[in-house]
Image 1 (cartoon, rainbow over the protein chains, first blue to last red):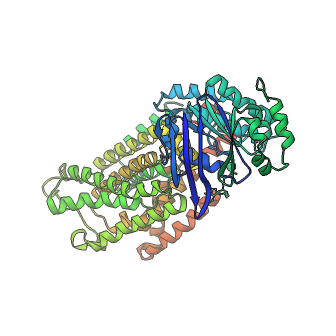
Image 2: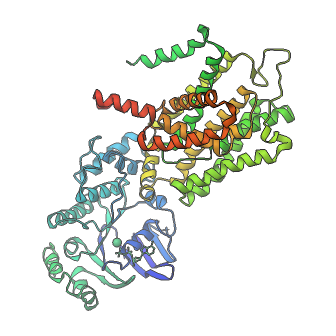
Image 3: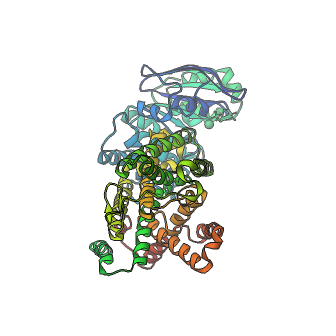
Length: 255
Length: 328
Ligand SMILES: Nc1ncnc2c1ncn2[C@@H]1O[C@H](COP(=O)(O)OP(=O)(O)O)[C@@H](O)[C@H]1O
Ligand SMILES: [Mg+2]
């Protein structure tokens, strides 16, 4: 459903993303991994329209969306979360998410429907959906969930989840990974999941694209990617054990 | 409790009929007129779009209407729509690039500050048509009658009072409509996290332009009415930094987050100006701005929610209200 071809982003002479190409099939969870600074978030920003690419094309459901404004891309059906959560702090959780439902769909729903969809999205990520629940009380895990709920309320066909695990402890990480899998399974949302922590991610993704210094260095099934010498070199010793553990936890997938 | 606002409104509407003196009536008209203008400013100001450029819209409303009447005999009833179109064009011309290129906060304030000063300089520069800094008076149409509908001139202050009362109420109605809309929530979201607002499909530029238009048009109407009521305008009273700063000050003083806050602010600024005038006479004109500036800083530091906002908060703290009533 998404086809990224040779996209490049140059920040004043520095190539943050360098001729990156990959495809995403409907219904899959694609892991976009790579060390810090490898260009993952920038790739997301290019797809989501937050940044205009310096070159290349991005095709989504047959439309070229490269360079379209973020608000259009959102209404085309791509939802995104931010690595560092950006909630509307002075609004209630429900209003945060209802705005996304109201403005983020290709056809604007009624206000009542938007609020119903917001409650549904909040429920999906198990956040309180009462109108009094505020952003202030949320911890790191709660803010990540709010990001997810807000993106989901736009009823996306494709969800870009950026580092949903950052700042979480181990049990929260597992829960977050399971949540993404659940969202895909229950809602049929295709997901690109960016993460630099490979272990937990390996458990749920169908395929991986590995970035290093803005370039794709490997693409394939989790176990193939994890055993790729180029990937091992990049991730040298960081969490090899975790990766193997994650792969071992996969269900119904021959490793 | 529900009837209270209506009773107060009725009292306000009937007050001038109870033999109110000319001067208090004049003050009341001014409070409502400026209350309307300040309400217009706050419609966008309280959503994070702090404009110092509203002097330009006031000036357009005042001068376009008067000039068209004086030079071409075009009735203010036609002049006002023309002024509104012009104000809309100016609002879009200044707003579009600002919003498209994310000029926000202090930078937005600076750009708009320039706008109001340009408007003032333009009025002064076109002195052959505008009377320059001496100001201009709409040609009177009251030689034979005490009123002229065509010229929007009424010698009876009572007529003005009811016109201005109606316009002020319309302003409060606009505020309420905006307040209840999803667009208000979206604009609040934009003022907090502009990029994130875009990422959930909110068309940031369009919403900002929309609220700017509403605000600019209201202000333009206020300018036109002010010129007609006073039967005199000069560049300083309806354009430039001074009046724009006074608007921002009044709104902050009154409280821009409650519906009647801007009106309270208008009453406060007018009383302040009158007392300063009584104390120092007209000789110390420049002192106004200095005192406004100082008080603005004091309010921002000590009473950020303004007089009415602060008072309501104090009452609420003493007597906890049911949550549903807080949004009323
Ligand atoms: N707006 C920007 N301007 C300049 N450089 C940037 C900008 N955004 C990201 N970069 C740089 O691009 C590189 C990739 O960043 P990013 O995509 O955030 O990496 P990742 O998400 O993989 O950690 C980094 O070196 C970063 O410093
Ligand atoms: Mg990143």
